[in-house]
Length: 491
Image (cartoon, rainbow, N blue to C red; front, side):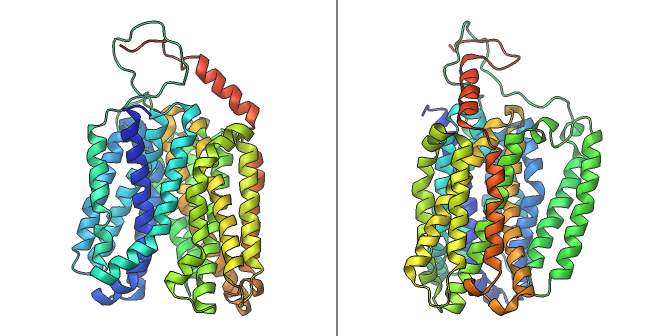
């Protein structure tokens, strides 16, 4: 680890972990927030929905901004804005201010998240991306596991406002660190050099100038499509929200069709054709979408099963599924060696099988299920999901051209945001159609359906590169300078 790469890795890991922690601690704080601000349940739900819609709408466009103006700069703006919005929420006088600031926090989170991957892609050679992505994934798993415990302790001791102050120091620190960290382009390991460079290498940017190079029409259409999709999926999961959810998803479909038509005609499209035509990139995104939908839909069912059916309190519920987080944290560092040994295809296929097996095991539980079967199923879920997340993310970031690293990161984050909303919406729909089973897994249809969604990651995993293809690509990158550049040596 060089002195130049260490700050980049620190910013990426802390930024991703803070966003994951923010989402989990908010769930614990919402009841106290509702009581303190005398808010309705719909208003409190908008503190989550507003954030999700803002993030999902802007992730790809934020990645495009990073590709054009520098991931470090966009990351710094997002991190400092996230810290400012968090401080504002902690001081907010009413629920309206909280909702507005949560939307602003979502905008800043959208700037921050794709840059966490874009910075890694430009700082690390492609053949060494697996380890930093694994560290980032482990940090996300640790933050998600610690969120309910830390959030519960803070709310009990200091109130809900302390939850939002929790993320201010780290985001402020990494935002300032990003501002003083020079941005450089990584060179493949082993690249030979023959002459002295007059200037340090500069990351290539998309061609064109001005606002047109950012494709504002495409960005607007994509934001409308993704915003309506997430809003529709989240709304469909609420009681009585099916009709509004269907209308929102229909609107998203219309906006998506308009986006496709526009992108085919655009001179500089927001979604680069070479990225969307890449089979590994598309397959990796499909893996992430299916896996996140299956996992978060399953956790939604498991939480209600443990608390409402078995009568456990939130802490006991968190302890029952703790093996999931433990396997994510411990398993992430093992994924890069597995991927190098067996290739992305075999590694992801094994992860999809583990994830599906975990969902099927939970689907067999009845109301008398004990700690061991729940913990075993949670361990399988954690092991399968971390393998899929590290492997698919590595493929998406590695196979995307460096000039489009931000857009690739935005697409990866978009899949990770839409997937959970899709999984929970499927559960809500099936509970409405098959209400008799309730949240008892063995009597309902939700978990078998989620097992089918999880199994969809298998064909997508089979479309990922094999070990031989990955090694050939790495050897080519290690022996040839990037196209369009002359080999050089640094002073």
